[in-house]
Length: 271
Image (cartoon, rainbow, N blue to C red; front, top):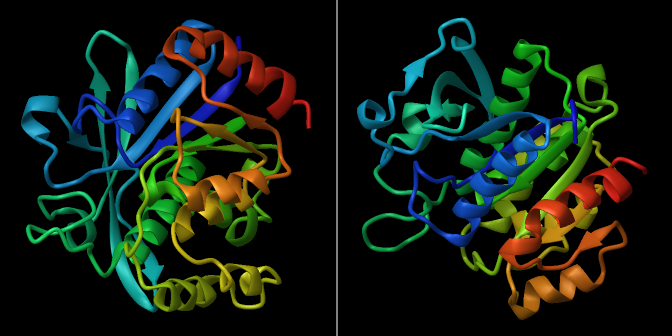
């Protein structure tokens, strides 16, 4: 993996969020690839539950200050950074008070999913790409995981399709056994995507998607898929069975380093 550039985009990441399967993988895989010589950049949302003082986050003025248009609204983009202790890995946080200041990730205190999760995912996707453009850092691989990161493949392939920075990038999506039934209003999601991508031929395909919509969109716009959990729910499994791109099945932790590196080099980058 020496000198390969890998952009990791995740909704969850330890040590900033609880140690879920997805958050742990989002830490372990970049760490492993960096140890193998890859150049790594990590992005995640700056959720309100992240303690900025404890983790020593600070705003990067030269990257902040842009407004992103979400459904005809100008939403300020704030970029903060921090380093994971002892790992020499820098994490970029996508922030916006309206979308991420709340003290929870996907749902409120009544365990009801936020009605604007679709807008938050669109803002996060645009925020990641616009920040990478400012960094002028062209990744060989974009590895995506988690609900709010799920629109990154779609936006790179459609909204930013003419941007040379991502013209050679391969996109990989990790899928975990965590369903998000009822997370969003599908009609509202499609309406907001259409605002950016009106005329896109594949919009009709998006309208057919049922539950776990964002994760399916991510898989459909990726060059490869990795199954991150030992088991997956029936809806996701059905969609995984239809994937025609390279697919890496679940790997036990002891095999992740070698398996992921081989998958990146021999299947993802060789396409």
